[in-house]
Image 1: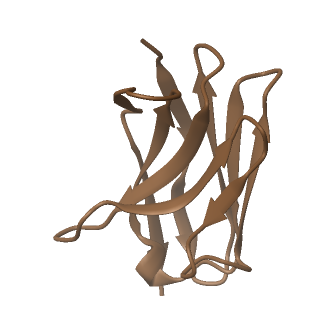
Image 2: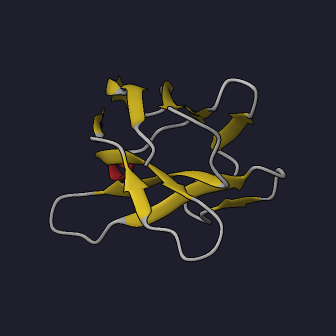
Length: 114
């Protein structure tokens, strides 16, 4: 088991910035961020393996930066040039090697006003 606790988020104006942080209770292979907007499926924002391999969604490439700190078991998401379509609940995600369950944080709301 692993616990994932998100912090950050809130309300921003279009063009503004927000930072999200995720604290994992132990080392885990993959840490990432997903988001889910009302009426839409949950989608990948960015994920990082413990070795540093990073995947980031095309929709946020160049605006969002993801950083992982293995020694602290944390994952941060710096969100710049925010758009109203970035409005969603953002979930921290974790997964171990092999046949591992998916672990989710409780979610944090990000709202971007136009």
